[in-house]
Amino acid sequence: MQGAGIRAFGAAVEILDLPESYELQETDVLIEVRAAGVGNWDEIARNGGWDLGIVPPMALGVEASGIVIAVGSSVHRFAEADEVLTHPVPLRHQGAWAERLVAVEATVARKPPDMSWPTAALFPVPALTAGQVIHHWLQVQRGEPLLIHGAGGVTGGLLVAVAASAGARVVAVASSQDRERIVAYGAQVVLDYHDTSWPAQARAIFGPHGAPAAVNAVRGGAARLIAMVADGGRLVTTTSDGPPPERGVTVTNFYVSSDGELLEKLAIDFVARHLTISLARHDRLPDAAAALAAVVSGHAGGGVVLVPNS
Ligand SMILES: NC(=O)c1ccc[n+]([C@@H]2O[C@H](COP(=O)([O-])OP(=O)(O)OC[C@H]3O[C@@H](n4cnc5c(N)ncnc54)[C@H](OP(=O)(O)O)[C@@H]3O)[C@@H](O)[C@H]2O)c1
Image (tube, rainbow, N blue to C red; front, side, top):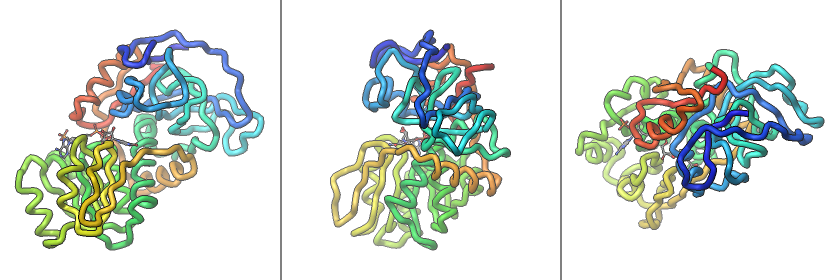
């Protein structure tokens, strides 16, 4: 089986000939991958900073869409030919940048018919992040103001979409070219991060005390964002850069968890609102290193997917 990944932690991404043989366990779902997402988190996994449950040589990739081609004996939610998406960590066999992927049933979601393969491949990690941050960690209430920093990214955009669905009044910080998409996701205000007066503009909106809650999705952005949070408020960051708590502000360094049922609910809501994720590029497996480099730059301009069987 062809995959794209690493021979050792820290090694360059290359095309790999991986063992096909795998004995399907009771709760396993075998998926023919139609598209796999590429995220900055894959760079962390490449360097060994995220334990995915397997060791090199291994395909990278932690999110995918595809078609079920076999199921284990106790799988009851899925059958052959079902169209699915998944964030399948801990990995059972190989990563998602491969022709086939094994995922535990509990991590798999049904793909809504109107969701494209690339969108479904880009959706799992950002959507689960958004669902878990907004509902579990921040417990955002209807009508509550929320500041989202880095809203132009794939994860940032999903944070806006899920927060808006929960009834939050979202103030987003992003590049002005992303304004239209972020407003469609449900933000009430979009501030341009290239304009150095955005913190003052945010303060004018939230009032002198600051925002009751904020989410950071920009590498190294949390230390500055905490100044925008009101005393006793909540700050969640997705980029492992949470500063020490101050003024009673709760600071959370967030890490995503697999959850097929939550993923399915989020996908249904996203499609019902006619939302999509903009695709910056799609590559074949031999071009995985270039795809990852584009994402790691932090300015890919949209989602990046690998298409194994094209
Ligand atoms: N811990 C977890 O479980 C978890 C889960 C999901 C995501 N993440 C992390 O969250 C981060 C964001 O993910 P993503 O999927 O949204 O990445 P992405 O799609 O690559 O987007 C990055 C975005 O950040 C914007 N940006 C860069 N500098 C900025 C600044 N100073 N102010 C405001 N926006 C800025 C970029 O805008 P321009 O291109 O316009 O500059 C771009 O839209 C990544 O580091 C990812 O690894 C972590």
